[in-house]
Length: 200
Image 1 (tube, rainbow, N blue to C red):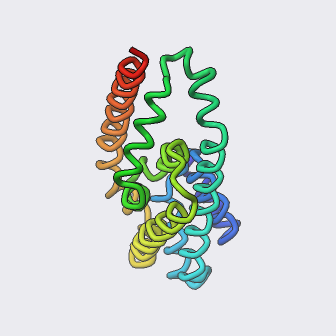
Image 2 (cartoon, rainbow, N blue to C red; image 1 turned 120 degrees about the vertical axis):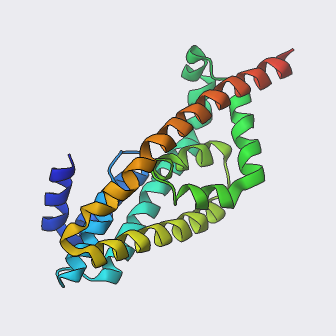
């Protein structure tokens, strides 16, 4: 998969960076830690514009994030209170998401954009909580630009060794994925408890 992405970015340039980063932010697990540093490496060889790489990646992140956010905002409640009931999801899970984003809102989205794994999926709970679109967009842009600027700069400096960026971030990916899974499990049971308490 990584080899195919490398070939795609090398051949497609900024358009490929934009599309792959849009796909990543819409929930498709494509590694920005490969794509953006590769763009930075190509910029170091004058094959791409460094600023263009950051803009293309960040614009892709924004588009994909908005797609995921708007779809979940529109259909998330229907899915949870409809088919979701078959796997134990309740209105309590909706209220849990709302409470979390009422408290952390802008910061949660911004911080989520800076974390491997989590950045791919932060739009889903944001949409579920119905956080308003303007703060979501601002937080997404700020987080995406910082993340992509750092990755592109690292790729630019490392040149042909840009894959070292992914290797350096690799040890953090599994622990974050485990933490994300544990958070989902805790939120699932806590949301059920909220729903059962309010139903009683």
